[in-house]
Picture 1 (cartoon, rainbow, N blue to C red):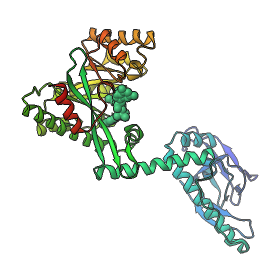
Picture 2 (picture 1 turned 90 degrees about the vertical axis):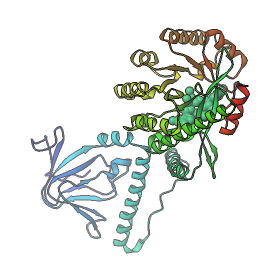
Picture 3 (picture 1 turned 90 degrees about the horizontal axis):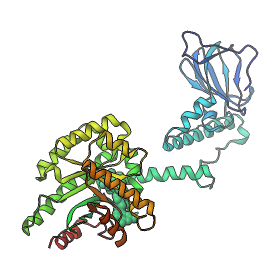
Picture 4 (picture 1 turned 45 degrees about the horizontal axis):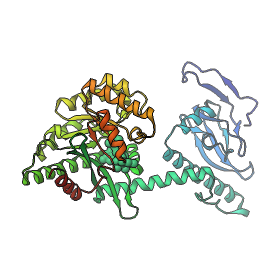
Length: 424
Ligand code: C2E
Ligand code: CA
Ligand code: CA
């Protein structure tokens, strides 16, 4: 950076933001020049600064900035050389922002924000270049367009971001265009072999992408506000389908009250102030008893532990059951069991699938079941794929089983057939 002779960096004055350095520039002094390395950005505290491209004889003024304006930030965002020069028009004081300050914030921002910034920077630089070329009429041309297909790691990262932006807009259409559906996976009582409930699992039948797994899009929906309408749709669909399951059982004179549906609930849904009111409204509309709905939550729900415990308690007070999903995969599973009352516990499939191969896994699963029994919590063993795994879970006293061996997730009409088959 080319600082003029009279510039000086002062300690923060009482009027300036604490911890910031103030820099003084005299009228006419260069603050930085085009092409130089970018190591600082500035916020103008007093005075005027001009930003220009080109040399003194053929320069083009891009803007005149005053109090509160920021300049010099472009090169810091993507570590590129300055694409324009800055000069004090009057004497001015500027707050200096160091490269690290900006780099940290950019690095911790969403990849979408990073991509948008890059595109804006590119456009801005192209425009600066264009104006500079206009001044040099001999070489009037726009710089190359921003390209995403050059195969560098950076470009690949941006392509992934673009893909996720596209996925998000498709998903938005999916909610409106009735492309979402719920599949149902049976849950069996492991000692009696009866079907006691289903887990509702989301599917997206996309016209362009085919059947999309929730693993591809749930996280994205959670990052955006999309999970709220999607989550509400899931709940309403699950209640409506449970009513249809009940009607079906009633028609064939089978017991209806014990059948339950487990619904996966995302953190964001749980944080919605009217979440419980919505649940209660759905129980009335579809004639469902709250205990027939199990809310499956993962430990991520405890990100804000106080809030989560309060909402869980409210839901349980109203009769809904709460099941802790993927148990054993988090950092402090046992900690949450101590702090929060829940109704059942789902042993993560990674444990189930090691049963029969690893004696240690058997010891761990046995211990989880023993702790649960002492706490009076039924356990659900997830991801049962082999008869061996099922036999071990039965031997260890696991109450309910779920897995491909017992039944894959299926559409509602096939789930009805399963109900008939198991309760014959
Ligand atoms: P999860 O809640 O742990 O659901 C169990 C997942 O394991 C399901 O995958 C299910 O199809 C799969 N699974 C069941 N049995 C077996 C088995 O024997 N072997 C193997 N390998 N897998 C088995 P799916 O349907 O792809 O869902 C994946 C995850 O997406 C779910 O994991 C859940 O976290 C999320 N998800 C699914 N539906 C919803 C939903 O409606 N709302 C929310 N918020 N998340 C959902
Ligand atoms: Ca689940
Ligand atoms: Ca699970």
